Length: 151
Length: 249
Image 1 (tube, each protein chain N blue to C red):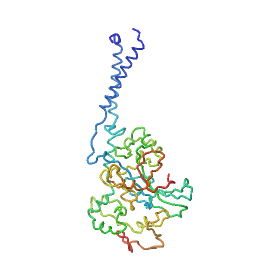
Image 2 (image 1 turned 90 degrees about the horizontal axis):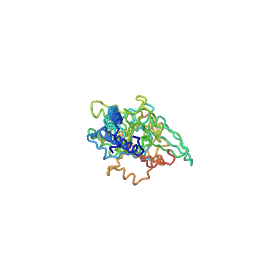
Image 3 (image 1 turned 45 degrees about the vertical axis):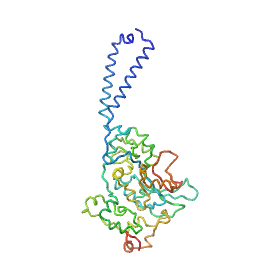
Image 4 (image 1 turned 120 degrees about the vertical axis):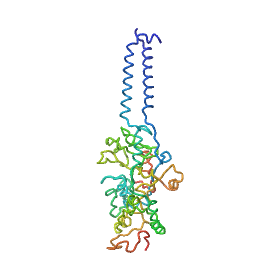
């Protein structure tokens, strides 16, 4: 072994250069690579948390039921029992946070037609009508109650 | 002293060993440390979605809800509905249309053969082709089974847009980065369901947690004929369709 290192003075310079290169690499890498990169894999771990922190705009039917339990109860015997509130009333997270913000009452003529207008691609058993023949000029809500749609 | 081959190899080996050891030590030092997210343990979930084709009425509620919840720019879709019309036996030549992604519903037209709706969204593949091609690690599979995009890290190179066999990705014209369905990560991590499932009037779409033994998805998968889109591509898709016709691409 002694023989190998006998005149290795010129190698010391090389060692120093390599060490400086490694230190520079480590320094640059820690500056350029985000802190949470590699936490779970080859990506920035903090991106998950950032994604989770976004605000919601649909409050969810549980939130609706906390105040409007009478409506939920009224819906139960009808065909629309499992239709979410926000399916018709639109996103109401703001209203759930601040009930003084009153939502706009949906227009039944366009709303009912979205689901129940006749279409040849709809499943056979699904109740559908051609609005022009069924209730020309009339509002659906004149006969059907959306929360309990049977006449 | 003239250096022999043996000496050279010995020395070179020594240097190589040193640098790789130093590299390993550096990796250890430089890697970030884990910080737990409050109230949500992503290792106890494995998210998926089930779609019952026989229940879809093409109302477009899911498309509108998605756009409102996620601020999807006009003309782009994280989820959309396609109307299929398969004339007779020509299964490989179905008529497919999706006016404005199905957002405004579908104007009725006489069906030439069998006609039905197919809602589509990111399949959150377990072996995603889009993740494999990302050159910088801006899109990835999370420990809870989602495919997510890191908006801050994305270069907008569009490799993943081309790699996705389902056409689920688009370039957001505002940020010029890629955008896609997150399976409403901000909702499901708070115990809510996705915006599309919340707005679906027929229960055609259901969010599913495959790691939860009490989730009705297990019954659904066990008792129905289930298919994923493009199974031949082995993407490990986690959007399970019931009643999916063979003509659907």
